[in-house]
Length: 331
Image (cartoon, rainbow, N blue to C red; front, side, top):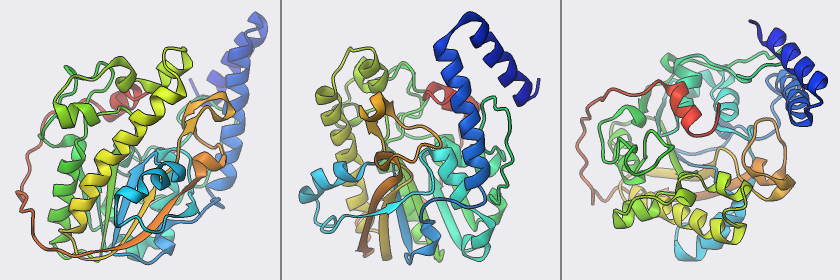
């Protein structure tokens, strides 16, 4: 069944049953298809490849106000600016960032990514939207993984906490940021012109207690936004967990800056909602400032070789990437 046929079936079902939620979902999907049709051609925001940097650190789902809240704790965060991201979800960001307009730059770029959308978009060739829609005239110029100088998908590596099934009920993998840092250090020492390091934090699940204290995650740490929507946790309870998850990755970024050379920029693929629009998390094609305005920090890295990670890695059998995206609440 085509996307259009399924959308028509769903909206017809919603109208017949007077299911307002189903009707609202179908209306959003129609808007989403139109929005992506327009912005695939004319993205709204700044492509990071328009800026000058040797190393780009991407923090997943990092709000600017959150980074500013913890900035006094980190010397390298002395001036937290902002840019408008090209996407409000990771899939949208990958599809609009890694585009043929920057083909020559991408051919000199290594990407180390903990985000499953790197595989879904760049390797598998999936483009948003993935849900039913009545029309989609998007014209994507997204490149393939073969257009990059190098790509590592850390979710495929045999690494600490590779299997999160015993510590996080709904997350098939747990990405320890220190491991992603090690892989970025290895890539940085190979002499690529540019290195993009996409960490998974502060994106849920909130793993700081697991990594720091080796304690199994609570239900709120595992699915914080579901808990918020269900009234099982308040924003005042969830926000500190989010900040701790941010500190976890920033501690690792601090290590990276001591083990990689060059001009470093720190940003995010998108932000996060904490009650704005009555929502938690992030959603495709929503140009809300808390989703689309992301941090931009300029600093410098100097390789003092305080860390000597193993240059090799081993691959383990992984769940299908679309299953992991579903585990993370994207399907």
